[in-house]
Length: 75
Image 1 (cartoon, rainbow, N blue to C red):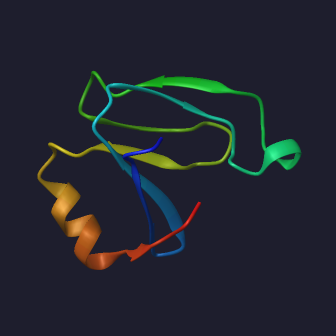
Image 2 (spheres, rainbow, N blue to C red):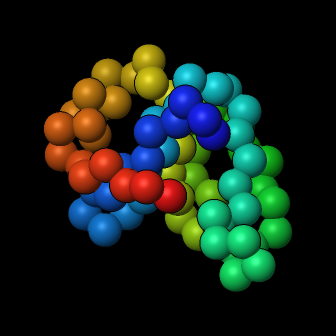
Image 3 (tube, helix red, strand yellow):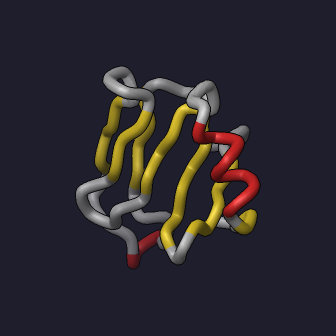
């Protein structure tokens, strides 16, 4: 997640990534959730079923809109 950008958009965490496969653990250490392995291969985005964090591939057209509308978040 080193090159990922995390934004808050309307109170929702959105992660812009250049990877096609990501893993989400909720980001809160022991207070997170089980690791969920996700793929962005179909449609270039996905949502974690545990925490609703959305992952969007940086190549998608909406990535720039997320950067403009969102607030950069230090996850």
